[in-house]
Image (cartoon, rainbow, N blue to C red; front, side, top):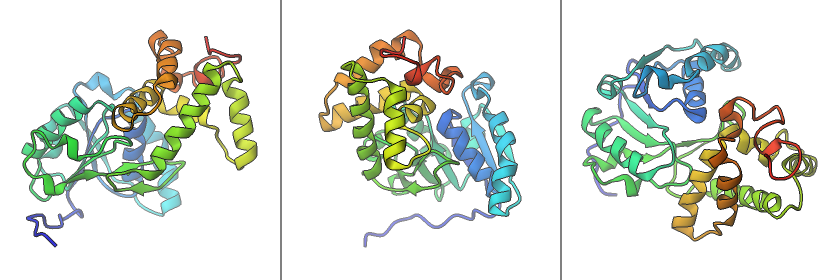
Length: 266
């Protein structure tokens, strides 16, 4: 085994830094705070928190009761240095844009202590292409959380197996809609009935946000050569028209997103 300068950090008193407070980021924060960890949430401006603090405060008590834990604390900052200077782990949960992740990884690598674990929550991008402006690559990895609190799985890998399978399911659902075969509501009802699932793929895509679904499939097309027709249809029919599902606060109501009645969604 090659030697590494990394040593296990003391996580009993040091906080976790979270960079990004979107749909995924705020859910990961809530789970960490509910489990008793102190988290410093960093966004570029105070206006970017977009309800993240409310989400954490509204849900941490219920989750802590399930875990039988005393919730930790959450603190907000717009300073990446303040968020990371004493962190034992720094989690990046920004959009699936490689250039943005390269920039953030370089900054965090310079600011965080040498024993800080630096992770990306990306479901499609490996961490190694982000090693552009970094030096301490021994402590940088993929650390992907699924959609908490509904799913409590965590996968640390350079090839996220489930996400590739799930991306294929999403892609085929979009093609069924693009071809006018069926609508999102019917697809979900069929999926839930067959697999005894609580949610269908279209509702899940609405919850994650349709622009995020598009960004992820761009990566798969670039790296795996997948068929671009589904993502191009999604972009033209929904994303470019501002119909982003749950991001607009209407994804579960059936008047917005993939669950809108009828084909085409608009």
